[in-house]
Image 1 (cartoon, rainbow, N blue to C red):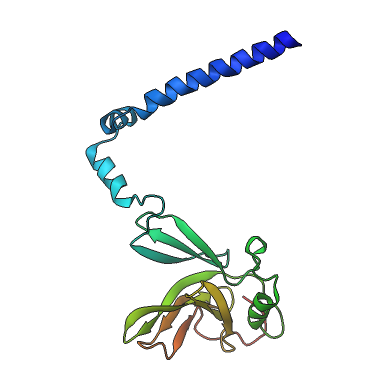
Image 2: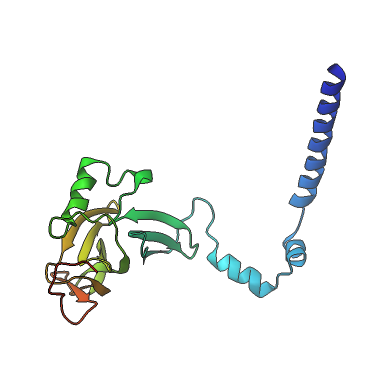
Length: 201
């Protein structure tokens, strides 16, 4: 038993020594060494440097992207392209608690159509609130292509605060659009006229 323990200890020590030597050699690489090893040109390195944001640094811009059939909005930084947040909108999100506490359950219930609770969505084409025609960063509006609804997201805390159902549409597409001072949020229907029956599209 002791000989096996000595052998294992010696093997681990040898592996640690090899890793230490390899790590030391790796850390002594220059930028030119890395470029050569990876087959990178100066143009490649410049492109990478333009998108690099060091740990703890901040992106110059943030983008809001529709999550499609996930029913979410995805927030990411530019130029780093790091995902900063998934905003739960039309679907319950167990991993972040959305749809599992009293407040977010009420928000999801606002999205019910004809008394039927709908817990899925297809987010498309967000719109930012505006003041005098300029983005003011207060709210984000996102439509649900699968159902005639628009959600209101507060950008103070990046949380969905309201879901508004349009009783005239059966579904919509094309996005949410705001007037220059966000007095109105407009939607576009996917079809030329609403369906006469109460079926869901």
